Each structure stands twice: as structure tokens, then as C-alpha cells.
Image (tube, rainbow, N blue to C red):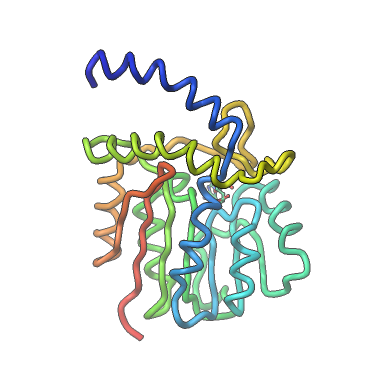
Length: 235
Ligand SMILES: C[S@@+](CC[C@H](N)C(=O)[O-])C[C@H]1O[C@@H](n2cnc3c(N)ncnc32)[C@H](O)[C@@H]1O
């Protein structure tokens, strides 16, 4: 990056930060509609790895016969159980994909999903396990974070940074004072769930996906995210 570009960014960044603070939005929850719009036709069992506070689990409960959320954080599991209280087709535990199979799941799995969780685990192993677990015709839907390394990645990062405040303002209209519980973007407010930085680049994630999930659709997205969608061949 040129020195001039860095100077401009240094001047603009604090202003953007102030707007982002004032108009926070969850980059993860933003993708719930994408997940719900891409569900497989057959909806028996679903697994969400890294389910956090369970908002997506509760939505999936209305779509699938059985929903299994897993999270290694005891606090997240407790929050998810509260969020899904009364939904008797939702189970929350700390299982890992490698330990699951037809013998542990009451329904054949038609969906494996994860939002901002793949960079917490071994990506190669997790994608391979997801592919193994899914029934033919089942779908893997991933929303993730990765490191920027190529000009295309940096372009998407720039577009995400520029559109972040606009999306924040749009999502907060009319202003929802006091409704900032799930904010994860705004500076100074703690994330509600455990976080870690990604260590793989977008291209590395795409390569891992293509190793284990031939034909997977991998796309950069706004909100500093990518999406990965794959349907297991067969019926
Ligand atoms: C950034 S948070 C995202 C939470 C949630 N998916 C959301 O969108 O709000 C990542 C979550 O993955 C969980 N996690 C980390 N390693 C895990 C593992 N090996 N198995 C299951 N969950 C894990 C963390 O505890 C955390 O709740």
C-alpha cells in the first residue's frame, strides 16, 4: 500500500470507527437469512458446529425434525439452551464432528452449518468430517472469516470497511437504543462468544474446500466474511 493511501486511511479510520460504534450490527447474524435461503429440500437432521448463543439453532428448529448444536464453551451452551428452551427437537452439547455418525444422531443429517466457527477448528478435518456426516443431497453451509493475502482479498476488505457503517446505519433505523446485546463489530463492546483470529487465507480455505468438497461454491462477502456452500452428490 502506498504511503499516501496509508495516510488517507489513518485519517478516515477513526471516523468510520465512530460510526461503527454508534450503529453496531452482527456480521454473523447477518448471514442467517443466507443460511435459511439455502437449506436443502430434505430436512431431517441438522448440526450447527460452534452454535454460540443459539439464535440460528432456534430458527433451524422450525425447519428440521432434529437440530444438534455443539459448542466447546460451557457459557455458550448454557445461553443456547436458554435461547432454545421449549424447543424439544434441539439438543446442545460439546460433541465434535469426528465423534458423530448415524449411531449418535436420531435423524439422517441433511445440513451441517457453521458461522464464524471454521477458523476455530482444523479446517481440513472439519470439512472432511462434514462431508462424511451428510446424507446424499445434504448440504454444508459455512460462513467464515479468513486472512487477506491477494489484491482481490484486500479489495473485498476495503469494500467491507466502506460499506460497514452504511449497513450499520440501515440496520439500526429507527435507532434501537439499548438493543446492542449481540453487537460484535463496534469497538469497545465485548463479543458475546469466544473469538479467535483466522490463520488461513481465503485461498487456503478455498483449496481445503475443493480438496474435500468437489464443486463447492466459495465466495467473498461483505462484512469481512466468505460463504461456502456444498451439496453432497447423490439423492
Ligand atoms: C465466533 S463464535 C461464533 C458463534 C456463533 N456461530 C454465532 O454466529 O454467533 C465461535 C464459536 O465456536 C465455538 N467453538 C470453538 N471451537 C469449537 C469446537 N472445536 N467445537 C465446537 N465449537 C467450537 C466457540 O466457543 C464459539 O462459541
